[in-house]
Structures are given as structure tokens and as C-alpha cells.
Length: 340
Image (cartoon, rainbow, N blue to C red; front, side, top):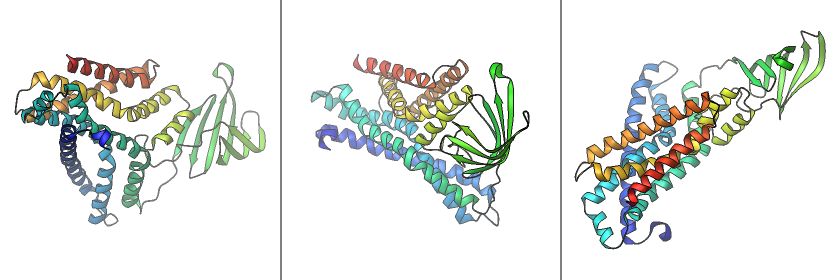
């Protein structure tokens, strides 16, 4: 632990950065909680009490805290750097032989730690919080199976599905030159590992009946989920990504996966650039301006990533590159400015 935190000066920077990160996160979390509270009051009814609404709001906000932590990290890093500069501790550290880059690194240490924990939470914590919250709100509501469409390789499927069983399935099998070869129908089917088992299937084109019919390499994850792609664990999203059919849909899911996975890198990159620019942009005691600047930098960079992601999806470019390259470029520019 001492190796991570460093000596006394490093520890002061670490603690100050952590305190400001906690304070900023608490404020933004409270604001998000309040906004959700106002929104949720409209849904109160005899089956959804005030106490249940409070529980739902708390768990939803707690689950989405991980989504706002990168924004909090950018704002808190700029504030921490500004406070340490205004108080003279940054100058004192430089007099004692600490470089500017080392001081910035000490500010980043608690932020990196929190962002890594956030990434772990995306896998193990936030999906369960989302499920628990929805269970509180929708416990008395019946969920009906909806008819859905999916494409995998040369097969287009229309179906209704529950947990591991489905009904009213139609498989449109395409042959060469995308011509329709057969339409296999089944009243019920079972979702198995890497295949679907169709019971008493019938091909309406060839008029052939099947006692059992198997659709091999069929998807077995991402079906009948009550959570969206942004709410599911990363490992689950990756499985869905590996089984998604249409290329455009695969690119959209890929973008969400890589954006969440590379969130710590993106946040650190924009923090480096923001701190580097704040040195020349702000004089002493300009903390309000630093807060607004941090928020604008975070939202602006997030918008840039969305634009690059959409361009990648449209032009059949890997969404991972659309996130990784801008993040590395921004981080590199920030490092170059800090070193000069």
C-alpha cells in the first residue's frame, strides 16, 4: 500500500484527490437521486407505494453511480489540481524535487483505483442492482412474451421466448444469392447450448415434416432479457456480441461493449488533457470555472466518442478503434503539454 501511495507529499496529494472525488461524486449522485425521485413520483399507484418508489430510486441511482463516476473523476481531478496549486502545495512539491508529472500521477492514483473498481462493478454489482430495482417496481406486473426477430448467418428467425423455451417459431432459411429455400415452422422449441431444438417442425415450402429439427449455432444468450445492453454484465454482452447476426447490430453492441470496457482509459486521457489545459487557462481561486471546464471537457469528449462510434458503425470500422484511438491521442496530447 505504501508503494502505491508513496511518501508524505504523495500521500497528501492522494488523500486530497480522494476527498474531492468523494465530495463531487456525492453531489452528483444526490442530484441524480433527486431527479429520479421527481420522475418516479408520477408512477405512484395502489400497486406501487411511496416506500417502494424510494427503494427503487435508491437502487437505480446506486447502480448508475458507476456510469457518472468518469464525469466525477474529470471534475474532481481538475478541482484537486486547482486546490493544490492555490494552496501552494504543488509549488512546495516541486521545490522538494517532485515533478509536475509525478504530482499529476499522485492525483490520478485514487481516480484510477475507483475507475478500476467501477469496471468490476459493471460485471458483478450494477446488473444485480438493476434487476433488484426492477423487481421492486414491477413485481406485480405480468410480463408477456413478445414476438422478436433475429438473424444468424443465413437464417432469419421470428419467435416468442420465455426462459429456456419458446413458441411460434418460423425459420426463414436463405440459400445462394439470398433466395428463400425453406420456411421451417414449430409451435414450440427448446433453447440448448449452441442450438435450438424444434418440436414437430414443418417446412411450409417443401411440405416436409420433422419429428425433431435442430437449428445449429443458434444464439442462447440475450434472449428475453429484462435488462438492456448498457445494463448487462460485460461478459454477457460479449457472448451476445459473438452470437449476433446482422453486421450493423453487431457493431452497435460492440460499440457499447468497448465504450464501457475502455471507460477508465478514456477518463484518464481526458483528465490529462484537462489538467494540462487548466494550467494555462485558469488563475488562482477559479474553482467554479474549473468545475464547468471539467464538465464541458467530459461531455465534449463523450460526444466525440459517440460521433466516432456512429461513423465506425456506418463505415464498417471496428468500434473499438473508434474509442481507443481518440483516447490514446487525447492522452498523448495531454502528456506532451504537461511535459513542456
